[in-house]
Length: 403
Image (tube, rainbow, N blue to C red; front, top):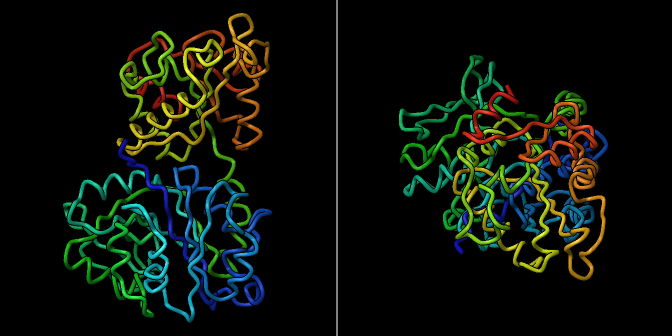
């Protein structure tokens, strides 16, 4: 099975923190405390929920603190490896060094001191469609672009030029999140240089950069003022609303214990609906009874493989599920350890309550979509609004719910 999900990311976690000043004298900028956690934790959390499992941390000044905090990455559910600058290399030199650690064909690249909550699988989809491009950049609209410099797009969605800082007008700016071809990243020289000033402008003139304009939460902690503002904005961003979805009968057309690609068929509009939720900044969590495991029709390993196959099909549409929860038990037909009453099998709310505890969503704005009364009962018991899917294009239902 070809893996279309981008599993690796380069995160720039070095930098001199000259604008931030005092707070970064002993604590790296990326580890500054924001809403009770080091800022970089949020960056990695956001990457992981979109499929990243291996993070290359490009470190420099105060690298010991970054390595001590993240270790092997397991606490955040990723494999962490390190590319340490022997001297300041700038953003281009740092990613060139880090690219030596990449194994896949594509990788995300982002800053450790800023957060632009775009749907990164959408970036990957745009890059895969543009075979002659080397990177897709997430762009955002800024009312006053003087601090950042601006980006000009051509009618085909390629970046035409990068303009200098200093023009205080509304413009598109570089959001600091990229999807890039690993082969191109590896071809960059490991010398002191800047992606923004030295590399991207030349590539733009060759038409080799895709620009993807998105409206999404953005913050950076590069100055004392922005660090202070991030304390409240990040806390509010992290408490995302969540769309809880049943699987059989909602994500896919229901059948007789569907567990193989041959038997699977998305309900109309489902990949597009999940992508809409991703683009809107919602969490998407699946909660599904899978008594076929308990009945001995398929194993946990076979179910996990099938779940991964569904993830791949969603990624082909630029969409992702943040987390899957399933209950394998059945109170009367289960075999062996699976024969039992449990708190996770809907209509009990156990899966939803566990997801709420682990993901911390804004429950008041969240909802559950199911096709059976037990789905709505489980939602009500967890304090989540429940809505029934009765067929038709599910995208229409979800558009109405998040409007």
